[in-house]
Image (cartoon, rainbow, N blue to C red; front, top):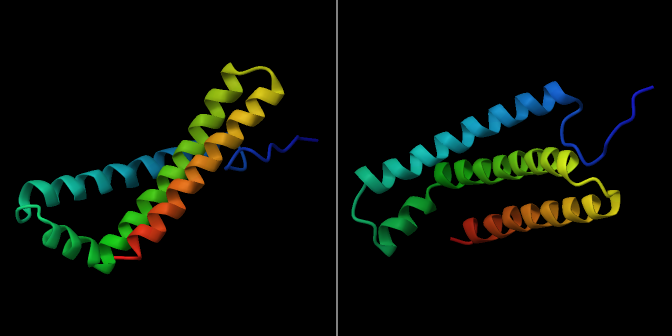
Amino acid sequence: MVAKNISSVGRNGVHDFVLIRATAIIITLYTLYMVGFAAFGPDITYASWTAFFGQTSTKVFTMLALVSILIHGWIGMWQVLTDYIKPALLRGLLQLGVVALLLIYVFAGFFVLWGV
């Protein structure tokens, strides 16, 4: 019988590996999208920035990037904390803190983004 770890996002190591790679690609594409806007778009003013983030495609891509950061950070920190923090209580508290911060980032991003 295999023990399940509820603090891991994926079902197993291969699933975590694929999730990390997929989210890294999404984060990279989003970074290129933002750099492309900054480098080749109009001068960055409040009006151009608001218009850019007012587009539904930008909002959806930004939310996808935020959720990707959540998954990527969750798996990455779970692996680091599992490897290097041996006391179970401390590791659990640190994992809880990391997950709480990541969820706050996603929810804050959602409310800021869709409030434009």
